[in-house]
Length: 280
Image 1 (spheres, rainbow, N blue to C red):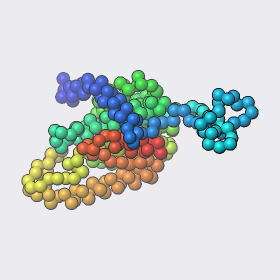
Image 2: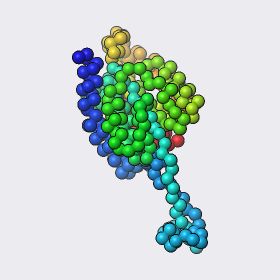
Image 3: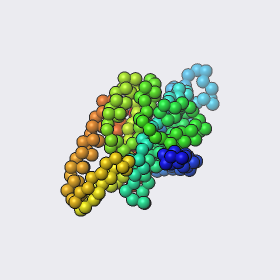
Image 4: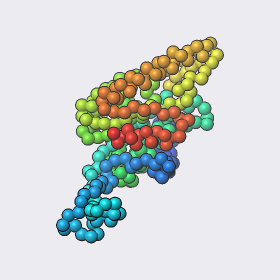
């Protein structure tokens, strides 16, 4: 059995724990002091209107009516469920972490994506991994978790998007950005809205290295040996800022939102931002 296949199978076996963690995080987010609004249009929508002849007494909202001289009725309707497609980058780069006390970028990205799936499904939306079928209901969660745990290979085909979709793309976005810009262009042409989240380890955010350091690409494809890592900090941070600015411009041009998240920050912070970004 190849190392890649063995790793994929081992990760796939961990999806029940991922589902449990996502459901717990979603419950905490919804009940917290700064609780999230339910994401998605599947919940009941209502508005007040003045009562008219023919409205029954049971239809009147007496609490609202007590504020004035007129009686008011709460009109209710169900909005049509929408569809949300999720994608989390795979590969060796996403499996990196700067210390044993922090999650890998992949682990944090999967947790955030699946927790968003929980929140979207509770809002009545159809949810799935980009390129797979999108379905409503909690029974979809294991399928989403398994797909997120085994993400490998090429970037998803933007042709799998459909008008009316919303999409969430999560990765470290440290590689070539052509996929992101092409994807956003295709999404904009279809009227697809969404959010891009960059997940980085704090070491990638601050570049806290000094002295002699051998930098190796996690995939083993490149290495750089330096005797003055601290001297590279300014150039590195400038390039990171420029990359983020490029992603933000591309997202804004497509009507999307771009945000960042560090793995030493509580995932609830990313969820709070995404709840607004995905609802925009």
